[in-house]
Amino acid sequence: MFKKFNMSLAAAFFTLIGLGSVQVSYAEDAKAPKWYDTVNVSGFVDGYYSYNMNGPQSHKNAFHNFDFVSNDFNVSLVELNIVKPVDETNRAGFYIGLAFGEAADAVACAGTIPCPATNLESTYKNFRQAYASMLLMPGLQLDFGKFVTQHGSEVIESKDNWNYTRSILFAWAIPYYHTGARLTYTLNDQLTLMGDVVNGWNSTVETNNGKTYGIQAMVTPVKSLPIIINYMTGPEIIAGTVSDTKSLLDVVVTYNVTDSISLMANYDDGIQKQGLGVGAGDAKWSGYALYGKYAITPSMAIVARVEQLDDKDGFATATNLGTGGQKLKEGTLTLEHSAPGGCLVRLDLRQDKSDQDVFTKEDGTPTSTQNTVTLGVVHTF
Image (cartoon, rainbow, N blue to C red):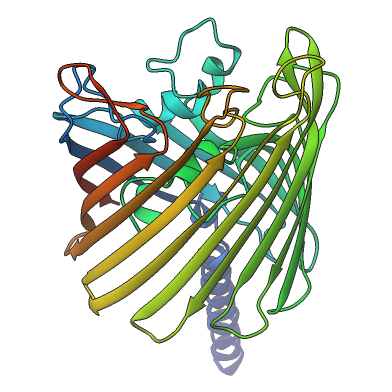
């Protein structure tokens, strides 16, 4: 009897151990993340209505970027981002940014809407970014593929800028994207260095035998004062199969004065060798943009932007090439409201002014000034 009792007790003991092992195994399986658990999905829908007080018959806002059409409701950009970030646990990742709308076509085909199938970049127009990432060692990340440019104080997505309408410098002084390899090394909280080798400006398909090289230093001497310095140089096609060096210096300084007041400045200086034609002179452009932002409440803000682009040879804006170019200025006042549920509403009051008559009135008369009112609505998810 005692023997049977001991055997029963032993059986119960091992059964409990077995059940415990199964439970531990189940717990471990539950804790082990699947590959898709580390993937983030997000996106937005961006629409706008713009009114041009000049009333041009073309219904176009001259020298604007992404708010191209006046007196019309438009979907500027619809974006879906699928991202697997890298970290110490997951050293391999990727970024797939899908883009649709006027802005996607404009980025791929240098402002041409719709982007024609004959343009080599049209094949990739719906991939705003598409690259693989690898963490080679702590702080050192390699990206390979198509990615947005490192230059400028503004980006393609309006929601990530301070104003709704894009600056002149964003539209005309810098590239949109690059395709190649990018190496980023974060030394500490004060210094991050980046270098890339790419096909060139806005090129997924290489158009010459050379490569463009870029370097960047992101310096934060104090937490409230991030400074970003970029330099890029490499050959670009100037005519037919002839190419020559195109270089760009870009500096962005941001100063967060208080929790509610921020200032930002952007400077660009570019040159295209033989930009005025094969055997002719070089084309140069330079400009600055100044920003001020005041957060009235956590959901409301007011932003002012003033800027100037000195396109002295007419190369950057394709205006009066080699015959004086133009000096283009603009001032924008933005009223912002962040509504509950991920809806961002902005109203831009903007004036563009040139030292040349590059704008058009309703009767076709040239003029040097253009006033616009633009309402932008972005819903994120």
